[in-house]
Length: 146
Image 1 (cartoon, rainbow, N blue to C red):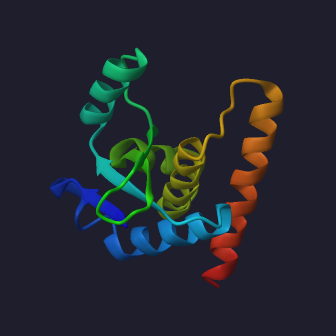
Image 2: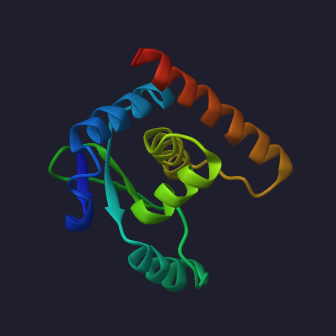
């Protein structure tokens, strides 16, 4: 089960159905297992508070991942965890990079899910591997959508 929570501030800007379908597609591309997870789209202030509380950073960021890997008693699936996305940060980032918001959102969603699946970018080798998988998955998502 994929749980999507979108801050009421962004209900008109973020297409819940697109997010649900894209998350499902990302999981299908990255793993053969069935997982549960939550996607939260929120404000810069909320993500900054989470960043400070759990990671020691005192600034907003685009995406945070909180792995769980616990068994979901309701579905019998492994609950991967939560991906938290900051809509304003991502929107500003997309504008500064000159890319569509949807593209930046998908890229960061893939990034967050990869972290939930255990990928990391702590060393140059790990970063190269994670970025390669991230880019390949991104291309497959957009090739699939036509």
